[in-house]
Image (cartoon, rainbow, N blue to C red; front, top):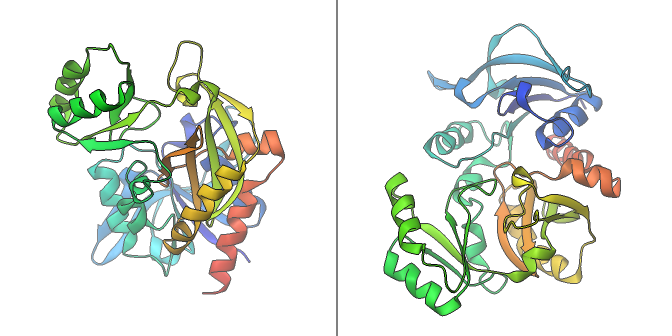
Length: 315
């Protein structure tokens, strides 16, 4: 089966091919005989009832600083493609949300991965709210007094933007920290969104586990250990990836959330688990494929494409 595949992603010239999951997905697609077309989110267009994109035929190769070639620029009708990948990174802002509305117009005739309707409705820090028994104590609020009461109850907490990513704007407020008022002023001056507060989990010092699910099934995990003196474990801010096995608790969490992810067309998902607690369900642009390649020799990209190819073969 040869599929026409379009990738909606951030500029390809700036990616790190040794860590970027979108590149690994494209590389595996090409190896399986699928054709590739690449465009950036700002080149997505709705016009006269059609979903169009301005971009380039794409060829990828595993050569640092020489990892891609582009064909002649052209405008295409995305309804003519078999698969469109929604792979730009957050922030999960109105620009991002608008792309999900536009791509929803061609799905599922053209298979959009992940399903844009449920990417929009299930952002990282909100889907976990449906599983309160699996998560640490959590509050979503903009009201300062409510956040103060949460801190008074739990003492040590994490405060972060509801739609942030990559560890940006994540603060730990310990029992004696007096910065909640100032941080609230800062965040509320930037946007009108609520904040998310979670009880601090000391086990984060041992690592923040990223578990990868493909079509609702766990296929492996990596542990992300914070740098010395850091609370955040994100690799963007110095977290160190380590080999780690799935535990019984990880599998229990996946068994609970997997059927919902499968039902809602979330084929490639990464969840975050700290000390046995589910903290995020990443559906927008999850990562971790390359690390599992290195640590476990698990070809996650191939597993993802096998699911997609089955779905396309089934019509």
